[in-house]
Image (cartoon, rainbow over all chains, first blue to last red; front, top):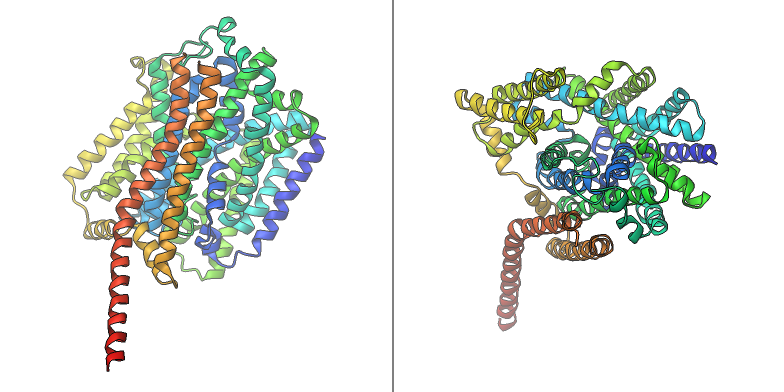
Amino acid sequence: MALTIFALVLLLYVLAGAFIARYVKNSDDFYTMGGRGSTLLIVGTLAATYLSAATLLGIAGVSYAEGPLVIATLGSFGAWIGTLLAVVYVGRKMKALNCKTMPDFFDKRFNNKWVSIIAIVIMIVGLVGYGVIQFIGAGLVLSEITGINFKLLIVLFTVALIAFTAFGGMYGVVVTDTLMFFTMLAISVVIAPMIIGQAGFEQMKGLSETLPNFWTIGGTEDRSIGWSISQFLVWILFFTCMPALVSRVFPAKNDFVILKTAIIGVFFAPFMQLTVFIAAGGMQVLKPNITPADNAMIVGFMEFTTPAIAGVGLAALMASIMSTASTLFVLVGFALSRDLYERLFEKELNEKQSLTAARIGQVIVAVVICAIAIAQPSAIYWISIYAGSIFAVGWLPTIVASFEWKKMNSKAASISMVAGVASFILFGELIKAGVMTLPTGVDELMLALLVSVATLIIAALVTKPTTYELNYFTEMKSTGMAKITIQEFMKQPDGLQKIKKQYKQIITVSVLFTFISVVVWGYFFIKLGL
Amino acid sequence: MNVEVLILFLNATLVTVVSSIVVIAILRKQYLPVIRELEKKEEQEVNADDENKHIKSNI
């Protein structure tokens, strides 16, 4: 059965990719789906990032072994708030500035090659390091379930991914992500409740007797509160400027779509993750001693649901791998074709050449990542330790200062990005070697962030912004998504009525989702907390 | 009552509450004043049209 599902799922995405390719007529369609993203598609593509292989395997494993509160209470909370900031603060602002990729922003804001090069290198290293490890890890698990040779499995995945990333670009990723979102949603609304139902709330609560601290933030390992706060900071800072989240906003049709996504999309973050973590806790009742603990949810849907539902679970696991990988492929490919080749090397390309370059970029990235995943060089494991967090120490201070501070300039941006990343790696290596020790609750990310912010402020104070930077800052401050959207709507017949209708719709959506949220989490609290 | 479990589900609820508050604040600050201004303009145009019609009918 596993093999049939594997083949069917791959075929579905290849067909979806081939179908979408017909709608990609120019580079705008390829990079931002021509700004035609509806609320359903933008929520779908955003929510598909919530159940990555790391969530479904790694964090679910920690929830199973140490308790569901360990990472979810503060670490995941930081990620959820970070997602909100990525959408309404960073993504919305960059979209208003007509950015098609995140490095576009650095290019427009500073018009400086070095800043752009540093930003692109951080993005490629960060995304590859963060994504390839998940691709490898989840591929190994899936290879075990299906019995398909790991290398062959990675090649098959790559071919399927090329079908919709190289031909459909962001259009392909957004549509297939939405399909994947509905598959993944099955884990949260069907599989997790089935596992929780079989385990029973009372039995789950009773785990505290056999596993002391199972229902505490410290968990069975009795982790310090400093560690939990550090997790909160890592995830909120990383997610606020994570390209996989921010760039989801760029294809949105208008500001109303972004604002609805901020409510509905952000609601799905805890909804999709927390149900999985609680179910993973429930697996401790149903089957203790699963090794490795990362397989808890897979054992859950293979052994504690019906064969048909187990098939859906398997398809969802594949969706989580493909969603992570397609994001990785498409964003790194964009960096290669648009940010490096077209903009930095100043290639004058016509529409057709630009689209061809974008597609070639996708194929190159897919082949390179496939080779890395198969060869598994030791360097990739070293990079993965630092990959996710380098956005927080490298990009975040520069992005925030660029939005808010008139004195911000290219020298401050370059120094801050390099100092942040270099100090983060240096502190990390010194701590690993035992040369440096930090007090409980303080980690290398906090120190590196401090270095990045301090160097940025000092450099900006002792240097001056160029006339271009000052002019762009003024232009940026007078641009906003609300202004653009109002202008677009007022060009249509009955524009004002349409704006008022959208306004009322968003208020209704916010009230409705707040109510659903109170009911869902209130229910879980009554069952597990009282 | 387990306070730590309460914190977990309070945080999960808070995310949607905060996003709703932020979005409503954006609507009130960036859209409502423009909507009111446009409504006023539309009303003035309707009134001016009515006046014109009234004058024309009197003539």
